[in-house]
Image (tube, rainbow, N blue to C red; front, top):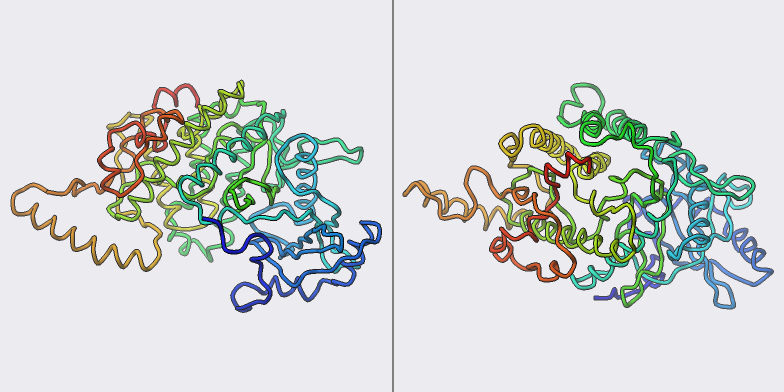
Length: 495
């Protein structure tokens, strides 16, 4: 279904709750000289009159207001909310220069719909009062706010696949972010997230990225070593760096390296009313990267799958993850079909959902700095390792993991699911057998069906979409089996 208000029509006019995280946005509003913004924009268009709209919007990093010209043209001015985001080693100025270079590269060399850059100042501008970027306004709504049904979501995902493939067709001999020199030529420079590089091998990049993430978590979220003991998975980045050397030949992986958006998801694509992607925004996460980084499935509803080896009894988590198993397998199959149409000489789909790709996925989740999720992924890393080392006999699922649910669902699960679990247990105690379809000692193992290859797009169209029971009835099908792990044979080949 389409949102009630499209584009800037749905933006805010006031700070309804200024105490809830709006302090940075209020500073942007009060510290910016909006009269000078109007003069600057008018001057850039040869004196065409304009004004700044009352409405505004913001994300986690930027404050945005609409600029309206009297001839109907619309721009936006984007102002960083903070001087320094701890998630990035590079400072705001260099990140903005990188993003401008990326927008310009994509405009010149791809058909990907990105806004045109009309001007920027990466430093605090004396006349404006803040760093800024002026971009063409794209009328539409973020996919995240659209409320996509399954059919709409898959239509959008097919377009995201085309964006991923077009990016991946641009290859470089270094890993890092796009930069533009004084002569106007594009090249690969430092990676903005680590502020290191450019890297010549995948191993160098993995070492820098994992170290950056460790310090991001350990240095900022814990007071001392005893406090850090709350997070048993705090060492996960070091496991990642070691395991990638075991699972891949990353030390000798000299590329070529493809462009990819490491933050591609429903939060940074703009849709029109018919669900066509009309804009890709926030392009500071586009880098040239190794294959297992390129092979990450975008963040969009219906593709969430658990860490390998996770078992859960929670019915809502089971439904979410099994729907995600179907959705992620569908995505991988559709991606493979799209690669075949393009005749890509380095199939990304071969690496998608492989163990090395999932190891990188786990490190990305680590960057979210959620202790329970980090601990789950640390256990999952060991599950993946022992499965490789000793096969299925060496990999035992782990259960009772914390699942993030909203309070209402959690209470319902405890009230309804808990009573059913007690009834099942009582019946099992009476005759030595359990009437439940779920083994009592394991919960629902969402990684049991990981050895089949993702199906093709045509086959995936018939995947079941419905209740937990409907999905369980197809448990043996290759559709659900594609939940997210490559076979040991494919791992041995370095995928």
